[in-house]
Length: 185
Image (tube, rainbow, N blue to C red; front, top):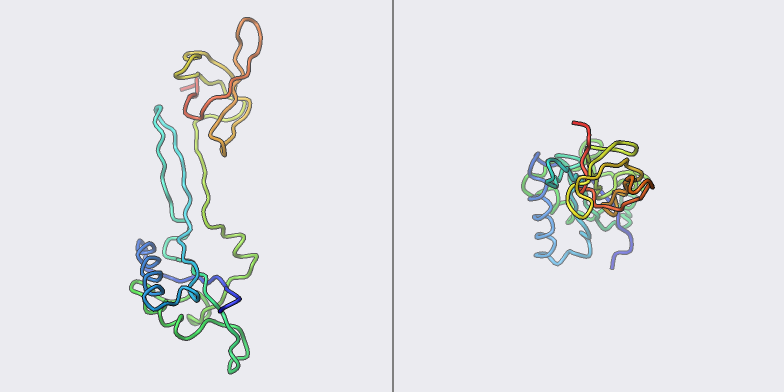
């Protein structure tokens, strides 16, 4: 039924972002309004930290106290602009732990396409104790105990290429990020 959707930012109580997102989705489903409340997200970033041969993933909220909602907009003859329906505004605004929409005077203002792209929905970073050019030691596997220099780190594939010296020749090894550790303590 609705052809255009816009992203809005909803201000919430801190640490209640996930509850707000769930409650908005539940209210939309209960009122058969999933065609008007398309998406609700809490932007997060997953950080992988490798310490002492152990891999830990931590999820951080990028914008504590805020939730992004993608809502249907329709042309309002009276206001002479595209905006969300009063019913959608009421559902979102009256969701528990919501303090209001982001905009002047609490008036909902949709994000521009540029702003939506800049925000991103989820990001992932990996933190390792070494970087390209560092001396590292291989831990585990066939080359356990060998030392080499980091040649390349591929975060997306969770791999690192290390150049080791074997039988007088430089030999590249493709290893997992958690299979090497910094040789310098």
